[in-house]
Image (tube, rainbow, N blue to C red; front, side):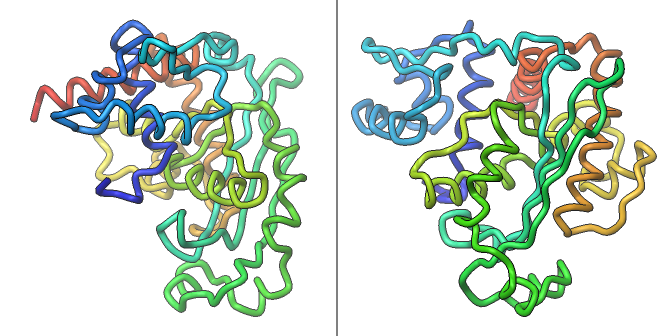
Length: 278
């Protein structure tokens, strides 16, 4: 597929958008045509791919009649402010989750406390990628070989990271990238991927603020009055994304978008309109 870069996170997002648009159930053949672009759909191969990508997802189900069904997830149906969230960010050795590795990870936990959503905890660490650090990445992030050489390997923090993520909704700015790398790392350690629902602040900002010249993290942060310590360090980026997310909750409520399921429909509406324009 064009993209070995097209991660399981991106595939899941496309499948969810299609299911939300088509009444929460579609045939595997329809999915093959509309998500993967097949003219002649290799149903057997798609069935194997589906089971490989989503073996433990209790909500994305492939039935015996080769119909893909989206079953309700209570987190997707609750009011947004009633879920708990973990905002995640990673820095990596490159752009390919299958070949590159995480060098820094941060997670900022959000929950309702004293009547409003607020930050209630964080986890952040450098990670030893067990390989050379490209010079371009060192220049971009300020992370050096010496820094990661002293850091734990991902397998040494994986259990603690899994506890931090728990069953919470994951939030990231460009979730496709961050979750693809986390999935790749968890796959290496535990031979399983994350099953958490997620919300992408990049996708939401594109939908809510089309007037912006771009939707990079610093641009959205400035627009919403969020200060950033620096860009391309996981802790700083995760904290900025958490503050952006808290502000987006108000904008989503103003639009009448009150659940994760409605956020998914917001994305699906944008995708359908974009398709019609082309």
